[in-house]
Length: 266
Image (cartoon, rainbow, N blue to C red; front, side, top):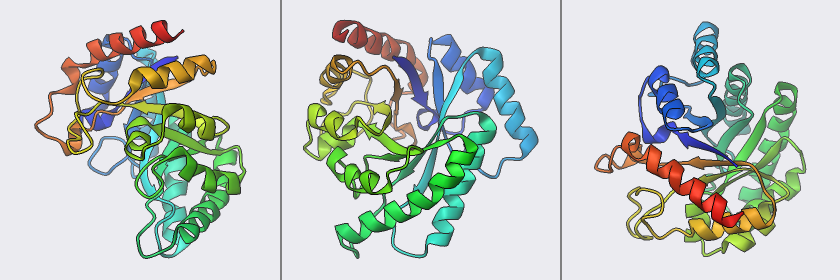
């Protein structure tokens, strides 16, 4: 398995510094948070995009994916959502990133069936552009579609190879779904896995990997038992929890922890 971390853990940090952290701590890749407050976002010009590619290439670090904020099940017109999806796909294409992360974002003012249909329609439309770009759009287990079972209602309808799943282990755990059941649901669609740790369902302040309550060992056991050999991306949500310990000092121990879990599971 390959290890990455999300720039959500180092908000606003310059690309060169992100690359140095990844290379210095033995991470194979980085998930780039695509938001206007970050150095990398859809408004970036072509020259700046090329500079980002060069920074990563020089250090031998991969750009795993673009973490976007499009909400594909959100009520409203399709146009703005599709425009946002296409801009994220174009950014991923230009940076050589294989994946784009999106959220469900279904609202309480619509039924689950309506949210599923909206998400499937938009993802199916965006899939054609993603296919031309050589990028895969991943719907994350999150908000209105927290579990693997929730995502399969959408992904099974879309039925396109360029649309898949991102397994966030915290949200499936909060949804009461076991790692075994999540993998069984998502295995036909799985792009990569986001790992993290928290103290409890009531206290989601990010913690060092292995010091909280999330079933990380069980998740790795399931993945290894099924011979899954993809990416594990540490999403440390420092951006939302300013009092959390700095990620930089946790990266080395975090990589060691993941390596031990993979070795033990394998």
